[in-house]
Image 1 (cartoon, rainbow, N blue to C red):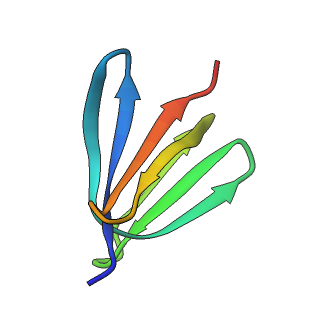
Image 2: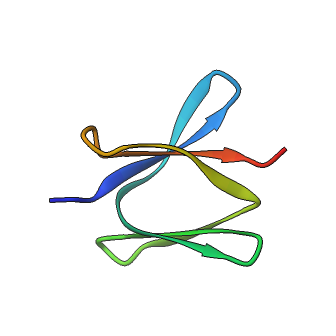
Image 3: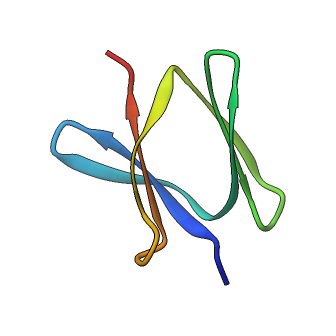
Length: 64
């Protein structure tokens, strides 16, 4: 399996926001995450901070 878990970095903490993410798409002023189960989340004004492909993790951070 190639899906990853997405985390939002807030200060020094990493908050899990979605498991089994299959697709990360930029849309307008944010990012849409789609899981392998079809669940979707839109995060406004966030960007990819880092990817850890071996650990299957996506780290997102708020702009600004």
